Length: 213
Image (cartoon, rainbow, N blue to C red; front, side, top):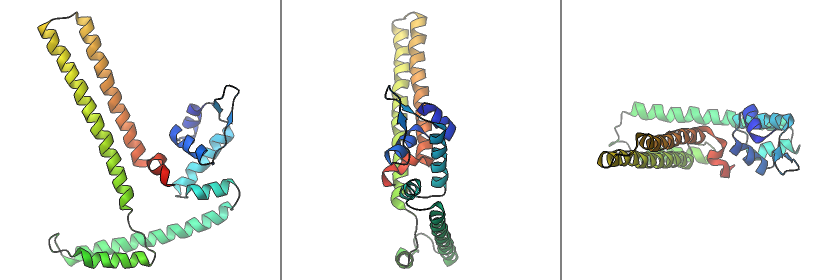
C-alpha cells in the first residue's frame, strides 16, 4: 500500500511517518519503481509507535524497544516511575499556585525573587516545571502561520476588489469576471484550510518539536 493508505489506517500524518522512518523506527521496502510499499505489519508498527508516544516515551526508548536492546517491560517500569515523579511535580506546582493565591498579593506587590528562589531549589532537587522554550516555540509558529494567512487573504481580497472596480470602469464579459473572482475565492478557501491544518499540527503533531526528540 502507498503512504496515503498507511496514513489513514494508522492515523499518523505522512510527515510523522517519514520522521519515524528517518529515526530508524520503521523499515519500509521499496517497489521496483522506487516507491515505498507499506504492509499491514508496517501499519501495526506505526500504531505501536503512536501508542508509546501517547505514553510519552522518547524516540530513543522506542528505538531501543524496536531493536530489542531493552524489553518493553523494563521501559514501561521506567516510564511508570517517570510519570509518578511528574505527578508529584504537578502537585507541587499546584501547591505553589495555592500559596500564591492565599498570600493575597497583587501583581505590583508580588515578589518574584522569593518564589523563584523556591522554584529553583525544587529544580535542584529534581522537580520539573513548565518548558517555557517549547511553549514559546508553539506560540511563535502559531502567530507565524496565522499572520501569513491573514496577509495572503487580505492580498487576494484586494485583488477581488480591484477586479470588481476595474469592471465598473471598463466592463468585461460577466463570465470572465466571475471566473477570475472564483479563482481568488478558491485560493482564499485553500489558505484557510491550510492554516487550520497547520494549527492542528502545531497543537499536537509529532513534527512540532521533531528535531528535539
